[in-house]
Image (tube, rainbow, N blue to C red; front, side, top):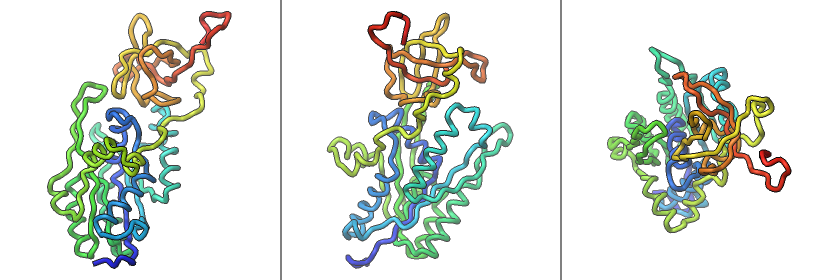
Length: 310
């Protein structure tokens, strides 16, 4: 039993691909339309552990935090619009919150992307850190049942395990049903399973400050400078239409152009509405179809002599 004056030592370990998937869901498909906030998440964890251990939150501290993810090469990222910028901004956020990053290169095997090894690395690092740092509670942010052996090993060290997981489903921009569910084996093994989707939905309804602070005030995934592409003659203009969860279209005769939230290079995709004027470039997708890239919202300037000025 932990004394009310003992420091509760917390270690947090992120399955990075899973965390990004969840954050994208809240930013583009959930009514909240905001990304998850690392600082707010750590504060939430401290308070949840304090409640479970029946101690004051000031005695619960995150002493280690680690983020694991497979990552594409810089060359490939440079071909994906603002992907390099997004990666760097998120790295800055993790660094500012004291989160140690661990990346493995994503390789192509048999025509498919493969980041095998990152889950093994997370498990080994979590066990080693728990052994040397003697965490009272180790927090896993994952839904993967492959971590059950790790949890059993952690329990043998005397570390309790809390898992933050999300269950949700939505239709993506390609019309596919995306279903995310947490392994029941994982839930059965952990000391403190936390169904974050329920916690967040209930907390938002009651305007719980701890839950509201789980979300970023701004979308940290968008650059704020106009890219070089807009300095040349290839820039086009058109009105947004049929805006949906994560994608939309631009009026551009003879065919309307599709664009994805990752194609927005300035501002927030969620701030674009039907009828808004957009700047963009026209490129080919992997099927040879014209699509809009480097999209940003522009304001129409009123009362100018030139009626076509934006």
